[in-house]
Structures are given as C-alpha cells and as structure tokens.
Image (cartoon, rainbow, N blue to C red; front, side, top):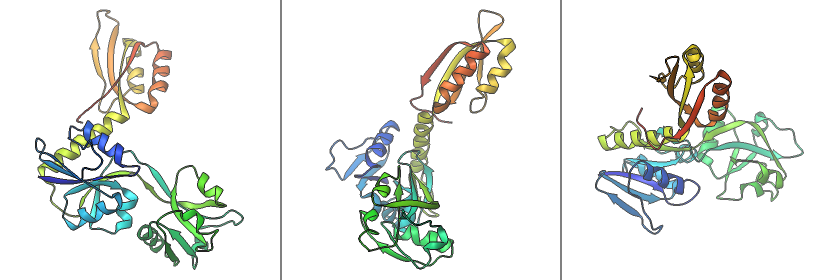
Length: 281
C-alpha cells in the first residue's frame, strides 16, 4: 500500500483531510486515530506532526505527505515538493524594532530569533549574510523585547502581532508558503501516487474554477470568447434561434462577477454559474 502522511493538528490538518475526502479517500473521523487504511484505493494514511512529515518522507519510511512548504525547507530532509495545494498560504518575513529603518544588510552580525532555523539559515546563506540564529518554538515576536534577539523571522499574515510587540516588517519576503504534497527526492513515482496527485490536482482546480454558461448573439461570439477563453477553448452549441449560440467555459472563481459584468455589457443573457466538484484536466 502507498503510505501517505497527513498533518494531525494545526492550521493545515482539517483542510488537508477535507481535500483528501473530496479526492475520494477515506479519512479518520476520530482525532485519536493515528493510522487509517483505505484498501479500495491502496493507501494508508498516517497522522503525524506537520513538522515531522518531511523527515518521515525523506527517510523513505513513507512515500508521500502533505505539509507546509516552509516546514519542508526548514527540515532539510531529502524530500521534494511535487504539488502545491493552494491552501494554508502564508508569508515568511524578517521584522525588527519599530523605531529603526532596517534593510536586509542590517541582519549581518545580528541575533535572529525564529522557529524555522533551517529555512532562515538557508536564506541568509543565499544572501551571503552571516547572523546568529536563535531557535525558539513559539512567541518569537517577544524575543526582541525580552533581549533574547535583535530581529525575528516568522510567519506573517496581517502583521498585527508584530506591531503589538513593537516590531515592523522589512525586506523582501523570505518565502511564500502553502500546503504541498511531497515525496522522497529522486524516488520513483508509484502508480498509486500518480493517482493521488491527479485526484488532488482535480480538487485544487475545481476549487479555483467555476463553469460559466451563457447565450450570446453570433455577431458577438468572438468578443465573448476573448472574455471566456476557457482552459483550451469554450464549448459552442447551436440554439433554436439561428443568430444565437450557447457558450460554456471554465472561469477563475475570483474573476466570476467581473466576467459576468463584461458578458452582460456585450449582450449575453442567461448567464449561469455552476460549481465544479471534481475534474481531470
């Protein structure tokens, strides 16, 4: 059986489980379950700490796993990203005292507190900057005020927590992270893993897109197709009215209302939006 690691807790856990369910895989219903077997799909799921998943996959004990890109890089494990999952997005940034105008070169020689020492060390090495890394497991933003560090490197969403601690962000993002599927580097992809990847890709695509149907006069068809080109091309069907056609195309969910406005202004009517529950492209 294919052995796959799934986060057992944290921000990635529930969405990862929901995504696997949408992909047709059996998942645990009790948080105390550590292993779930899905014999119909030839997969066993192991529920592990997100920070440990890359280590298990990189060692070859498990063939694949879902974890954060930041955790993968920080682990230094012999594992590689094979599919981004478009959830659990975050940005990793440097931050320092509010009263100082800092730039990346100012990190040199400073103490940098972080819960991701491997990730920060790799990034600073790429920048050819030498600094002392102070490893902390949590509450990194308090380290400067308490005198443990001069700067911090941490996951940032709104930045409110940093501001409350008297810190501000500086420099370009260290990393844009999200949930990813990983496998052992240079390992042969088993058929079961290929199926898992296709299914998860289908779920990701279905979440990002909707189906858009509308009727439009033939004289405006070319303009309408420019607005809704679809992934390859839209589907065009004849209507009983000889000068009208029906069009169907996939549209990015976030652009739906803007596209509908453009089509309406063009003269399209009967514009309908339908969710996509699964797909293979």
